[in-house]
Length: 462
Image 1 (cartoon, helix red, strand yellow):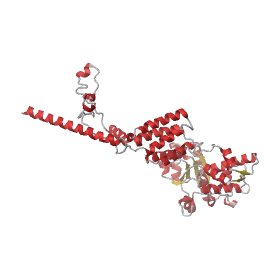
Image 2 (cartoon, one colour; image 1 turned 90 degrees about the vertical axis):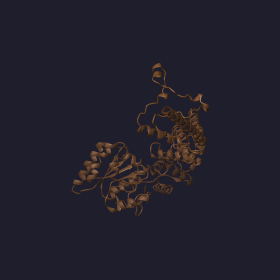
Image 3 (cartoon, rainbow, N blue to C red; image 1 turned 180 degrees about the vertical axis):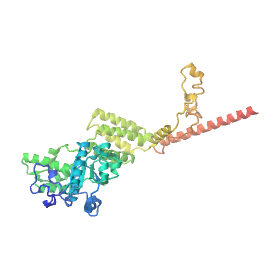
Image 4 (cartoon, rainbow, N blue to C red; image 1 turned 60 degrees about the vertical axis):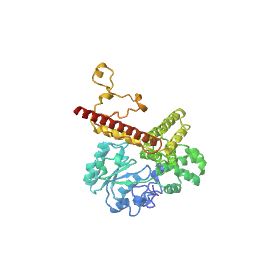
């Protein structure tokens, strides 16, 4: 976002700021007219920074702006077109399609073939909304130099943009605007008399609501200005601001990358045994409007993946928290989720179950289909018994300690894979010791059996 230009000649096609078209949204009226007016993004636009150097080079190049909403992606793209005196064609991937791409190609060809040839910049907003074939339609024209491609996306381009297109475009990561940036934009709005006087406490709350998004800030300012005018209010107070806004502004993007980043942070905080951080991310998600049932499902996963048999109670508690939320709903049921996330964070950690399951899956996928040994097969019919199904099977409960020492339960010829390796934490300390004892009994029984078989063979040969 930016200050309005004090030099209208910097953009002859733009309406002078001194006489704005009042029917335009405030965010559009305050859109920058010069690169120097841009507020924020100094990590790419500051002196000597990569995007600034691209402007100063005089040579446009294809690029992708990746960042959250309201941080200046469209503004910077427009400024690039003005800096290079290029025709600017904007396509919305939400509403557009292949026809819009064809139209852009025709306009670019016409601009290049005109009496005064001009370069063309094709800007695609929300480019991640285009499917693979639609994105591929840009490739030949980008390669031929017919136009410069600029995409804007709120999603990670590594996942959402075709690799072929991605390889032909520089990626610039734009950051959420800082509170200082947003206060500067708010001051510009006040200078334009877009809202009445406002208390410092109300400014702080408004900036927090905007959460780095200049468009959200300015749209909210317009809402407040209309409400204040209707009530003939000369000043916006913090109390009145809360009354007007209520809970309508959620500082969360339930469908975008922030959603996955935040659940990732919650999961990692639990895994890292930091209860305060885990509770913080839980509340951030709840405050942002995430479905608590989704969080509950993820906590069940955490209990299995990161706690496992080090504390089997964790899984039961996660299931109980899910049931409690289903019974009570919000906000009462959210306390059970908080209890669960704290328990998961402080519980002893083990991913032995997770690693064992993945190891077994990988083994089965690459291994052949080994037959079930005869002694492990079920024999419900006389024919099956005649075929030795179930023959010599040892019923563990009839053995000492309910353990058939030396018995084999894997397919013939398959070595002991030892998928499960318990850690020395929590209950798994005891599990590991028990497994060592059982394996020692197996080894002793099998050695004894082998010696007995060897003695019998020697006797037969004698």
